[in-house]
Structures are given as structure tokens and as C-alpha cells.
Image (cartoon, rainbow, N blue to C red; front, side):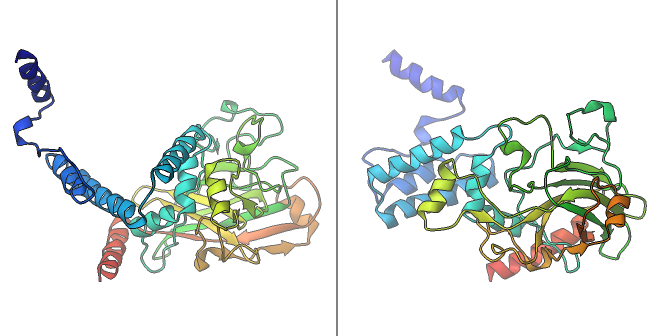
Length: 344
């Protein structure tokens, strides 16, 4: 029949020869997996084919192993649908899902292994934005009431007044040999003293408790911030409800996010975790590493508080921390070593 011929021709328009496809009829629990893999066999991207082969195999094995019911399957579909609906330009519920299941840390560990001496990485988290006050643009580009203006110069504040206890951060960015890395771009962001990121407020006039700055010729940097506090991951969505249903708490320990980029070096995404926080050993998103824990010093010299640019003459916390970057070659070797360890 001509209609049958026409239908076959439509497949050819997509580069598919129906005669070469497996006969996918009468599928059973024992045959469906291999038939799905066979249908994907013509994929020209070998890496994509490998990923989907493993994904399908593990997913099908999971369904068989758990004897997943139709109701449970629909619950999962609805959960993922709701997760997608919670995503916006300033909220990434799928990253939060990945974080809370430990997938983000696993991917980070495999892809961001560092050589000895380099600063370890940590999870990005769902609250990074691209609109931080930027030292690379003209200060007239941003104007938000009571918020710090760009550019973020050494000693400037990333937080508006009243957002929490004062914190002064400084250090250097170097390579593994201790050579300074000048003009490195540092993105840094944190919660305020209430445990909220700026994107979590109903009214957000602009970026707050986040900034972008550059290192000096000697690799040094400094800025004013507020002392971050432990906080719950967003619990008003499907991920928060899932974590609670699993009998877990939803809290992250206090931390300061840092992301550093410089030509000739691998991008570093990391965080500083504050000693003494009760959630250091049970982080809801598995991001804490011992090498990233810092102990803030309390500076009671209020004259120094004022000298460092803070408005009120009161004690402030002080953190001095250097960051060590790896080259792509050094990172690749570290990942090769890790891959050998994992495979064995």
C-alpha cells in the first residue's frame, strides 16, 4: 500500500532504515532492556551511546530489583515534574536534588580531583548567580538602595549593612609552587545572618552577600562580608519533602562559597566551612572536606574594625585563607590517578 511506503520514506528522511531495526514486539521484563539498547545502537556519538547504555541498563535493573509498582512509578514522574516546575532563573531545584542525593559530590570528586597541595573543590550549590557586583565593569552599571556598588575593590563589602555579624576575609591565590596568580577572578557568595541567600527573599532589589573581585599583582585579595550561618536547604519544594521523608535533617553548615578562574589554570569551585558548626559532619548535601574547614578569629580591636571599613565600631570575625590553583595538566594527572584507584 502506498501509505505504508510513504511511512517508511518518512523514517528515511530521518536517516533511519526500518529494515535494520530490531523487531520490537511482545516485549517482556526479560527482553525489554536489550531491545531498547538495540534501538539506540545507531547513535553516532559513541560517548552518548555509552552513557545511555549504562543509564538504561541500571534504570531497568533498578525497576526489576525493587519490583517498582505503577503507583510508585507515577509518584516518581510527578516528583520530577514538580521539581522542574520549581526551577527558575534564580532557583535550581534539580541541582538541589542532585546535591541531596550525593550525585553532585560524586561528579565533583571524579571531575575535579586535585594534585597534592592544591585547594580541594566542593559543590557549587543551587544559589550561584551571574549578577554579582563586578570589579570588571563600571560602577554606574549597578545601583541598588543600601547595597554595595561595583566595583568590588580590595577591602570592599559584598554585603549591605545589617545583614549579619561583620567578617573580613583575605588571602592570596597562588599556584602549587607558591607563585602568585594575579588578576584571577574570584566569585564569592554566602547567606546572610538569617541563613538566607539574596535570591530567597520575595523582594530582591539586586545582588547582596555576593561579589566578584580580582586578585592583585601579588595574588592577594580582601573583602568585607558577614559571618554565614548554618541554614536549611529549601524545604518548600519536592526535594525538601523528600529529604524529610528519608528521615534526614535539611541543614547545611555555615560556609562561604568561592569560585576562582584564571588563564592557564583550572577553575576552582570550593567553599570554606566554619569550625564548630553542629552540622559539619552531617551536611545535607555532603559538601564538607576537612581541608576546607577554617577557624575564624574574633577581632576585638574596634579601631581595626573601623580601619577595615566596617560602619559600626564593634568586634568582627577574621578569616585568612590562601587558595592554590592547579594547571590543566596537573588536574588531568590527578584525575588519571583517581581513575586508576576507582577502577581497581
